[in-house]
Amino acid sequence: MFDWNQDPHRRLNPLTGEWVLVSPHRTQRPWQGQIEEPAAETQPEYDPTCYLCPGNTRAGGARNPPYTSTFVFDNDFAALKPGTPHECFEHEDLLVAESEPGICRVVCFSPKHNLTIARMSPEDLRKVVDTWVEQYRSLAADPNIGYVQIFENRGAMMGASNPHPHCQIWASRDIPNEPSKEQASLLAWRERKGTCLLCEYERVEQSEAKRIVEANEHFLTVVPFWAVWPFETMVIARRHMASLDQLSDAERDALANILKRTTARYDRLFGVSFPYSMGFHQRPTDGGAHDEWHLHAHFYPPLLRSATVRKFLVGYEMLATPQRDITPEAAAEQLRAV
Ligand SMILES: [Zn+2]
Ligand SMILES: [Zn+2]
Ligand SMILES: [Zn+2]
Image (cartoon, rainbow, N blue to C red):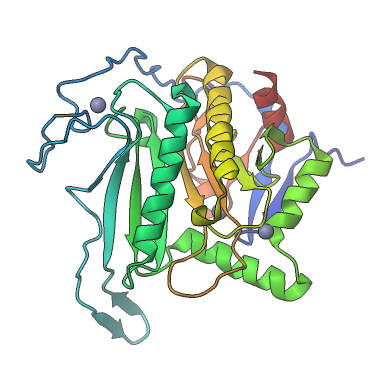
């Protein structure tokens, strides 16, 4: 008899069309890989050497104002630049390139250097949500911007260069790879079934209940059925809405609430400030209606089964298909238990 909790199988991610290999029987094998040093936990409220703290001078030479809430500035070393002239290159359909204009910003969540989303007050987190909405709106109004990617790298393990609570916004003319794959799937689903893939998925997860990690009136956090990272989660809006600017007042509070509760569970799981990359996927800003989009966020944390053992996507995963040992259901159960 095949046992979905023990036997190797693969699961489909309907948002990307990609598969993940699940090998639950391997959770028994001994670990002989890398042990990471747990990051030092004690940070001061103000760090005179931090380029994001209020009043400090940044690497580019500008000085931060003595801000008391959120603070947004254009990235001093931006990957994308506004006003990049239009240019295309093509050679025998093999060498294809085009210029990419855009804007990169940094959003400081708080003047306090030692906070995280998990440790911020709901009131202060609500200001972060409001700032995301404002930024999405103003960047969407720029005719040269077709997609706004908001993302946070948390923790040195994820390559975050600074522990100060902040996120980045990279706004580009073109839709980047990941949202582009999702858009194709959302459109194809709607054409085939006449419904929204993520509205349906939210309903299925709600009724199955076994992958739910957190829930409130307006959002649901689940370990997706097709999760690649051991404790990967997805925060899904319960109402069909395409983007952050469609959040009601109550939904903005609910988003702040579920982000705090989800990240607090992460922190409790291994007793550390949990590293992750997170970000929102939402409606492109290229002028189309894009009602096929359904607002959600992904959390991709690298930790495997302790604060010191991290997962790498290497070998088979780079060359063939991502693979996980612990099932998404077991991961959700662990997150629910803390
Ligand atoms: Zn700082
Ligand atoms: Zn929907
Ligand atoms: Zn997505």
